[in-house]
Length: 80
Image (tube, rainbow, N blue to C red; front, top):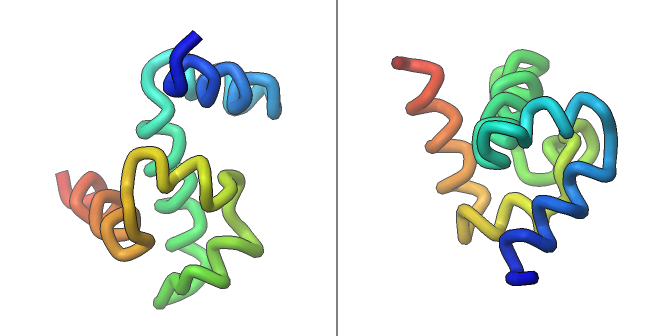
């Protein structure tokens, strides 16, 4: 089992909500979660996401190396 499969297995075991979202792509679930958290406050900081987000830092860092990249990806998807 490669790293990507291990991450998917771990994330899918977390909750029913995640299992449904991860059926498509884990990045979709993470971006949806970032948009959900973004709706709570005008400015999302890394610490705010840590307290309110559903994903741990190591999980989203698998796809985005910095919080800024993760936040920007969610903002770009929101505009589409």
